[in-house]
Image (tube, rainbow, N blue to C red; front, top):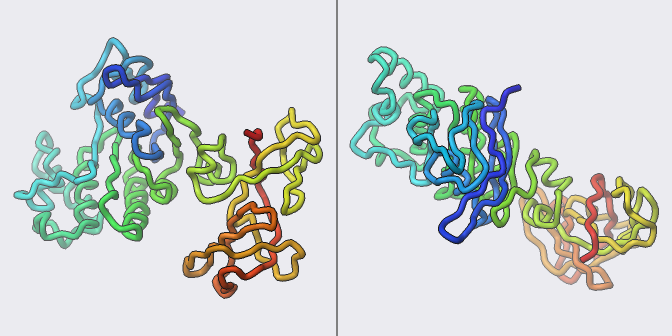
Length: 348
């Protein structure tokens, strides 16, 4: 299948400060991508380069197989067939919801404009608010209007720069799911930039994790969590701890919590010291286990408790347990490992 977007070995600098280094990824038509990473990693710069707002030092950007940016060539932003949603939505306060949505349809005839606006009001659940003004809407409603306005001209690519950042956590996750459904219904290709992995998981088909101007891993949310490519991804995605282990055979390692079976790198030699990623869902609370740990802290999550545990050796692990297992701080509880995905790193 022909890619909708291809970024090849992209370098971008601000003066002497190089902020993107050899960034490469692609996006298939109809897919939703995400650039995920901490503040200052370069993710918004990638979006601005795709939009044509930042010049390219090296590499190139292609949209629908057409080169739009390179070190010697740059197509103007308005000629890239791109829609954008910003953090502040940038709705026109003096225009109604319907007029905001139809703002980018000036070249369409009146009947086409009216049909498209009604269609988007229905898709976004805003049919009753067509004549309302932005100040009369909630944050979530404003976000839907901004999305509808960006989608109205049917752009080939939609760029979203942290559009949920000003909202509370629950609303952000809810809107991310709603936006995904709307984009899929419209069959739009889109990219979201965010620092919030829960948003990324809720909306994206494919996620690029960035750090220090480089793509660390491009994968599904499931694989980023269970098969992180390096320590940064392991620490940035989800929760977990990295504990010492020793290679016991070609398919197992031994830890203080017991033996873990799984696929090891081909060059792993018996007796080699390694580190193993242990997620909270890998540690099972088991009253019948001979292996125990002390509860040093806990977080109530509703259906579950997240326990912070200390082994006798001083190693600390996390345990996700059903909330009817309500143990006290400093209480000793039984635990055992149940690891489906063995993730190991060379010992530092």
